[in-house]
Length: 401
Image (cartoon, rainbow, N blue to C red; front, side, top):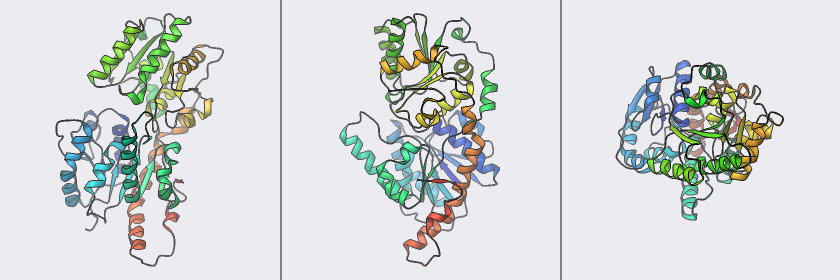
């Protein structure tokens, strides 16, 4: 099957989450380099409006949870890839990898990249879930022309040892447009908490156990019990109704019904983030948090759990923000430090070290170079003679792991 089609970027949807935002950013970067780009998803989403030059394909989403919907979409995705003859397929988020892997069976000529967008190992998972996840990771690692990891911590997982040894795992951290975010953060904000002069914490992320919002609510109770009686918590992010009800019930049990607000998804969260007393990322696991970079760009004091993916790297071990364990007591101590003008750690210009344009340039170069890497891998697999190892193509443009 000759490759003559576009670069295909696959994600479940184009909602306002980190994977979708990174899909849009990469599509724009590839288009700017003259590549033909096609974004394939199940059911689109609000960020589709930002892709005026890219071809958007909606496969259709079956009712039910996302894993089931992705599994049911595999035949349609496979047929689409046969028709499209893509230059490369990029699976943009962990949630989609097994669907892309299944759709690519019988299509060995298609270069494939799997982007490790989140730490694939989740604390608290039962043994069967951990085993199934590891089996899936081994499948995609063996199949990948390249793996792309957004954090060094995820890249070092033992399940990726072989692909690292082959030089086919690249580290490409997320980036942020600090100037654009600072501009949006300066826009008027009509939220009452932004104008009443009383301090609040802000957290940004979906309502899921990964984000550990229950521990942050308990940390707020500790802080209020130790003198911060007027401190409040604003959580920005969508979630299932059951998750929302559980968090609201926890806040009421702790006497915080009036002090915790779940605002849902906000189109422009940056004015609220910039006006907060502190931003907190309490996640049990992460990949590379876009919201952490955005908070740094807003200039707000930050607190992040050491378990939150690349947060220790981004905050340079505590130089640009406070780090904590993901439990209520440790989070409360770190927040208290950031609320105190004497001990507060400022973000300085740390966001500029994660420049979006530079990050996208590295990622786009990697994607566009992958077809040549794939051809070389296939030649080696067929026993053809070749002057150099595959690893040589990665040096000079991307950090190897």
